[in-house]
View 1: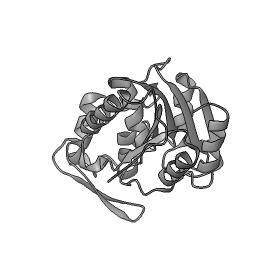
View 2 (view 1 turned 180 degrees about the vertical axis):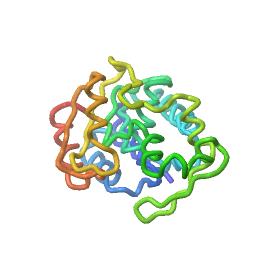
View 3 (view 1 turned 90 degrees about the horizontal axis):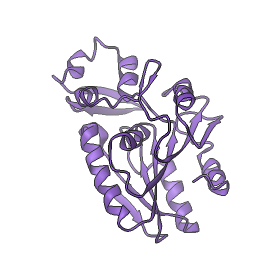
Length: 231
């Protein structure tokens, strides 16, 4: 499933949802309808099914999307939520930028594999980490099954952006970056984003009084960023 709304002939917003979710989320719905009303951006979002693919495969698909849309749109903004931010940031690290001009990272995960290990424990998922079996767990009431080579792909390709206190990302990135994180996030610690922005030049970093979903503040934060000319 995907959404593609042609609202603006020059500017495109590509939105990446979080892990084990889809494009029916509140943030995508708000952004999509806001851009329909204002015409500020054309809008694209699709179900990425991260758990069914390796990160490399997802980046392959995203590169085809960015490359293709770069032939049509002069300016592309890539917005990622949680694990979507992980994919977006790795896109900038490893793939062709095309007409991608900026990233908006929402409650960003910079160490998806590390967070899974921390939550479930190394011993419990050892066979998955070594690529011998799938990983099954429950997240927010939803049963999730992650393919067996998901972790192995991350380890072999070096996709983890934060490793302890090390930040694997260009200090001066080739695109503008705006980051928003909730102070009450209990899924992705805000302290890890603070580490990232202390080492990487970002255009704007905002901490809001909200949880991981940013359900209380996303709409007004998006509108504010647009009014300030930051996105």
